[in-house]
Length: 322
Image 1 (cartoon, rainbow, N blue to C red):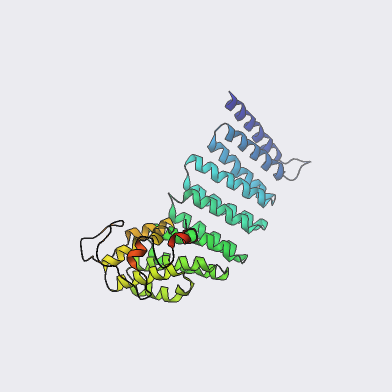
Image 2: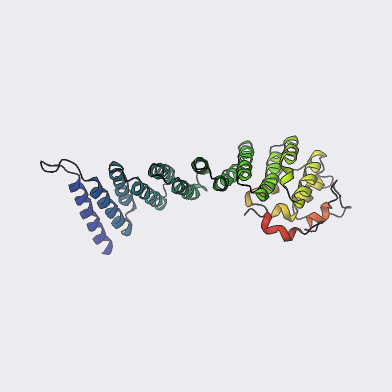
C-alpha cells in the first residue's frame, strides 16, 4: 500500500515536470530548473517504492534538465545516485559510464576532488567484476588530481592501478604503474613508501622472469629501503641469480614478505622459484640445513623466523601495505 502511494506521488511529480517544460504564448522558455527538481523528487519516490528502473530513468531526465540549466553540480549528484541505483539493478557496465559522466560534471563545476572521488567510488563497486573498467577509472582519477598538483592523492589512486595490474597478472603494465607510483611518492616526499614499493617492483620483475631488471630496480631505488627491506632483496635477488630454490623459498616465506599488501603477498606465494635442491617446498615448511648468510651479514633462516639484526615485528605497522 505504501509503495503504491509512493508510485502515485512519483507520477504526480512527473506530470509537474512535463508541465514545466511546455511553452505557451505567455511562457516562451521551458523551466528546466523546476523540471529537474520534479524529476529528482519522482526518482526519490520510485526509490522508496523499490522501482529502481523507473528511478534511474527519472534521475537521468533530471540530469539533462540540470545540464540545460547549467547546474552541473546537481547533475553530477544525480549521476552518482543513478550509479548506485545501477548497482541495485546489477548493471555494472552502466556504473562505469555514469561515474565518468559525473566526473565530467564535477570538473565543469570546478571541483576536481569530487570528480576523482566519484570515480574512486564507482571503481570500487565494479572492481571485482570489471577490473579493466575499474583500472580506467582509477587512472582517470590519477590524471584529475595531478592537474591540481596533488602527488600524495595521486599516489593513493595509482596504488590501486598497480595492485589491479598485479591481480590481473599484467606484469609489464604493473611495472610501469609501480614506477609511476614511486615518482608520485618522490614528489610528495614519502620515502618509506618508496622503500616498500621497491620490494613490490622487484617481486613483479621476478614474476616477469627478468632477474636482471629486478636487480636494476633494487640498485635504482634501494637507497630508500630500510635494513630489513635491503636484506630481503639482497638475498632474494641472489637466490634467483644463483638459481638457489631453497633460499628463494625461505626468503619468500619471511614475515616481511607475508605482511606486504595482500596482492603483493599473493604474488610472492605464487612466484615461480628456481628448482630446489630437495623436494620443492611450500611456504611454511622449515629446513634443517645450515643457515645462509648474505653479503650484508643477514641470516636468511633467522629472517624467515622473524628474527634479524633488528626486530621485524617492531616495523610491521610501517611495512604493511594493507
